[in-house]
Length: 272
Ligand code: SAH
Image (cartoon, rainbow, N blue to C red; front, side, top):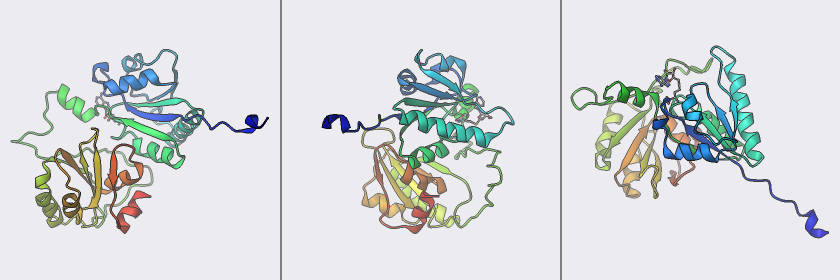
């Protein structure tokens, strides 16, 4: 019969990139807990604590994709990419569980780029990153009005063979995240330009981050003040300055993304 020839669409699976936090299950988010309860498949890293994993749905399939110390990282990463795509295409809810936060030294960016290339839907659930957990649990304020006005999260490791020499024209390899009122944006922009940062350095303003009504405005250091005024960006908003900011134009999955009408730099970086 005719009805029998109609193909059923493939089931729509998705991948949730979930931050497990530093280990204490009390530091997992409620959203992360819900994801662990909805998961059909959980791809788990070595750093994830057993206490967090024990909160997962009992009949979820747990696959250990942890990288052995000194093991072949690239092949393990390729396997993780392949597993995520394959299970999602079978219609599964896949949780990719990572220690700390998935977007801080967790290869979350590479995994999202892979999913995006393969047309797989995704969400990201942040976790408490080691820097924040260690600061809190060691009684070390990471900022203090009398002592420290800036925070840079850095790693000692580089991607093998891909260590980029610093190129000040396109950024110094640093991401700067500014917590501040929007009214201070003009002064900040002027200061960064005066310090010698390139006018085409990407930056993003995230207004109402993670809330209903989130808007992310993409611009360059040279254009962000005018763009923020034009879009009437309001506090609360966070400013992220650095090449990584442009990746959000491609990888965004939540809220509204405001892209510049024209900027060769941003388009080049977004597909990098
Ligand atoms: N995505 C993780 C970081 C992964 S890189 C995060 O956001 O925390 C792994 C490094 O993070 C470790 O080598 C260690 O330096 C640090 N780290 C992760 N969990 C930690 C913990 N509970 N205590 C101290 N350092 C931790």
